[in-house]
Length: 193
Length: 208
Image (cartoon, rainbow over all chains, first blue to last red; front, side, top):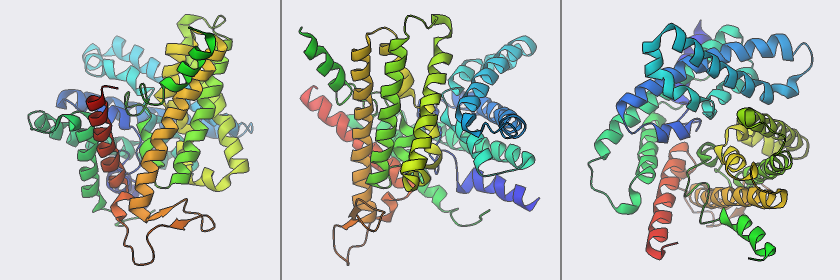
């Protein structure tokens, strides 16, 4: 139980996937312009990341390891993620059109989100057990969402700020992310696994 | 245009004019993640260039055999296979670099810069031109990595060619107090943001 709580705290605040580990910077810069899209993307990421980790952990432990196929890790994981995203998209469209409308456009983008591949690989490489892996994926994706939503809030205000031409767009977003990252530096060293 | 010129053009296009990082903002995760030291940044650049070269070569060789409906999954499998090869080679020949780059080596799979080149160029153009284009895009990415890593290592550690104690050069003497923030993740964001702003300023002023 203690490990689970530390995993949650560490991967939301201390080793935040975006601001500390630099996974998923592309969607972080790409969809943080509006609060609405940021929330949609966050929900899609939480959903897919947790599902993907669940599936890849099972595949790795019960298929790849027993047959000594560890070297196929990268190929297998990316294929599992890609097909999972496709599956989720199809199922959602059938079962819950409202949810699909909210998440639908973000799902294809997730395949190229390196945070998803990172979380599945790290769950295996850090040798987490099944429950720990799922909690880890959940915490990592919540950390991602936290950073994304805070950023969206800031960027909605930056829109009207005066700044030099050269800074406009991604440059100022990155510098803001840096300052945000300094704020998260305050959690450093509070806990470790 | 004579053929030699075309290859040179394909090779140099990725360096400044269509630089994958500064113009298209691709591959940001490894760019921020591994540039604490110049050596790591350069290693990452070489690994990515190798995958880009192999990928463009393979895809352009088989471009007439790949059905266009399933091309993206095929590209991804090709890239993932090459990345596996690169990761194994790194682990065998450069274990320290492999350790330092960590999970960013397998994450080359998700680097949109490679998939982008495959989709936009290699799936339509002949082999040699595609290979030149792949190397060019990889070199452009390496250039960005090296610039950012250089800035971060000089400011954040006051050294060059670290962290290996055999090769490290201390630039500023023993009394120098480095700006540790640039060695931290926060510094990566800020340094890259400022570099992007500089790049924007220069391209606008000189109309590149």
